[in-house]
Picture 1: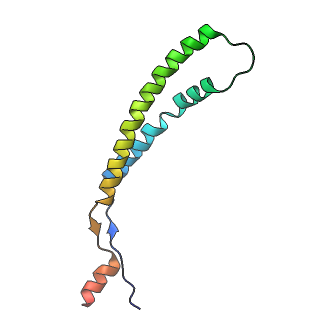
Picture 2: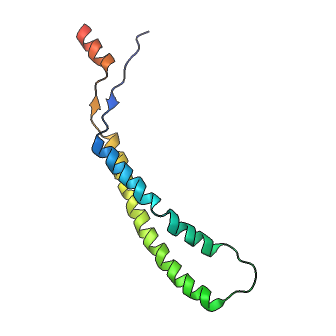
Picture 3: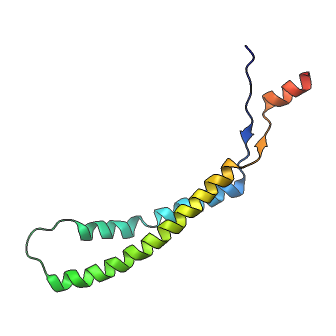
Length: 102
């Protein structure tokens, strides 16, 4: 049985840097999302309605910023992945040897 080699995709250093930047941008939302999570957790005891209304408005602004940035980053991530999928293939050592033998 002849073992066929597969060409590997060329992943450039620029692709790696762009992916790292993308991941850093996504990670930058961890703290604001933790604040939102804390705000929406069930609370026991008396409720200060005025404070909740003020916090709700501030958290709504934060969520809106996150939502817009998240959608933009998802599109960017999809583009990065598609670029890597379409990346030029490089010949493996196995393929080079096979060509030399023919």
